[in-house]
Length: 118
Image 1 (spheres, rainbow, N blue to C red):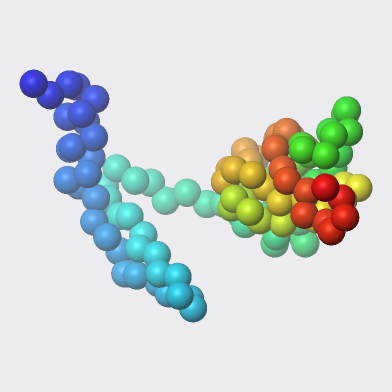
Image 2 (cartoon, rainbow, N blue to C red):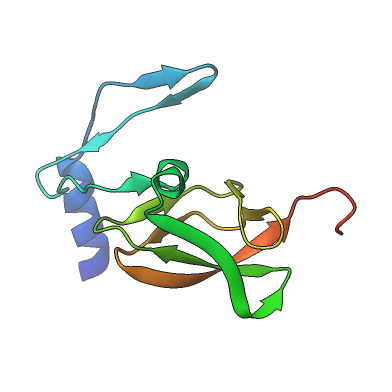
């Protein structure tokens, strides 16, 4: 017997198609295309920081394992796990792939990446 949730997932997967693959070096990705998947617009973290649409700063209580990402853009900002966050008092790497909502401040967990800081 199939649950309602399982049936919804099955129906959604039946409508998804793989788009044209894109490759760079040893990485290949395939976009998922389907009638129920709206196109979303977002910025990547590094260009957003360069354009000053996003800022990385220390949390109110300064701790090594978290920072605040302030997104001042009208679009969400995407950051990939392991991506370097330059700013605040020391550089850190983001611990979890995150989509920062437009016009938001988000506390994000990070790992210290500077030599001699651990």
